[in-house]
Length: 110
Ligand SMILES: [Zn+2]
Image (cartoon, rainbow, N blue to C red; front, side):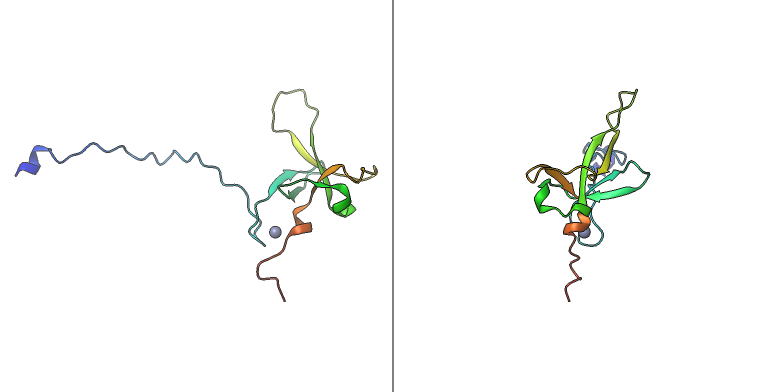
């Protein structure tokens, strides 16, 4: 009956179910690569690669740039993706390629 004394009740830190501090980074559902998802300046969302590449390595249709929206508030979350067009970036100028440029589904190989 020694256990009835409570001697075995070792204090255990209760795992806090609300403490989910890790942030799941978005992953492309096609190929499983980590992506960045940003709103565009026309109410759509775009998946961008995690890296920047020189403009010469990115076809024009996939060139994006991240821009901070001019806003009166100090909210730091107002970053939008803007297509790079109309201007001709220097070949060495870094642009953010759309993820679709480098998306290779694992099961997509013929
Ligand atoms: Zn992908």
